[in-house]
Length: 322
Image 1 (cartoon, helix red, strand yellow):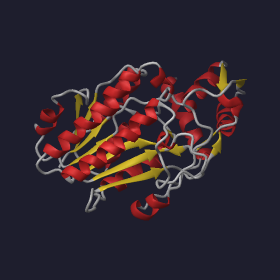
Image 2 (image 1 turned 120 degrees about the vertical axis):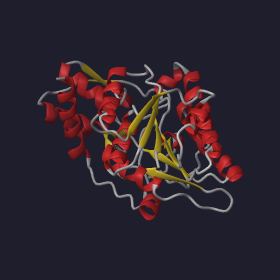
Image 3 (image 1 turned 90 degrees about the vertical axis):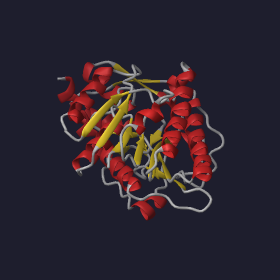
Image 4 (image 1 turned 60 degrees about the vertical axis):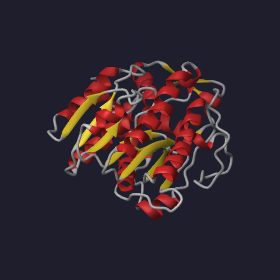
């Protein structure tokens, strides 16, 4: 039976689709190829997936009202991995309505499709570590309060979790929400720090370090994230009130951002020109995932440190950009 992956042209969506195809699944990939970042990169990802006969691509906005009919046309859809979203904390200050459309309306449309598909079994959707806001208790636990988001992006992701719970309670739709922590790796997003730093250092351009470099992130390699997504997909939620669960997917290590830069420098063989800057609105000082629940329930065990993952990304960057 086909698995629907929304955001299939995106970073995580591409890798999840590839992993599903590799294990013999049929994949229906949905993506609107938005211009938020380089469309050519998205097209290149889709082209690699389209080389597989079991992959079908549909260029579509998940917020479109006819999404339910589109998915219903594919017989036997029982599982959806919902990864499509308007990403980015800082961009939410520029175009808030893009987040309302993609992250709120789009999420409801996916839930509507799930409750109308006659054989539907399980929904896995992307949340974010951003929901923890300016939480100072470390590591971030799924039991921590998440009612004070400090960016619109975070607010939409927390809203998705609440909407999912309501649909789970009302319509008994099994769901797992995954709070991703700073995902990186080959075919990554150009708006992420690792991509921005690598591009600037390779060109001899300065890079800006916010909060004067005093920031830490739980950098999580894409292969580890994919393992967690597939494990969640294979374990439908259960529950009397609402069959909904939430997990952190992180590397369980808060790494200083300057260490990331050092690894890029070593791989490129070039020194970075660094400009120290102030904290940006919506940013947090540190992220650090408590993954004990995911370890217990999903068998999630991240294996890739930044010492291994960052050089892999830099080598991909060199190959992709020539």
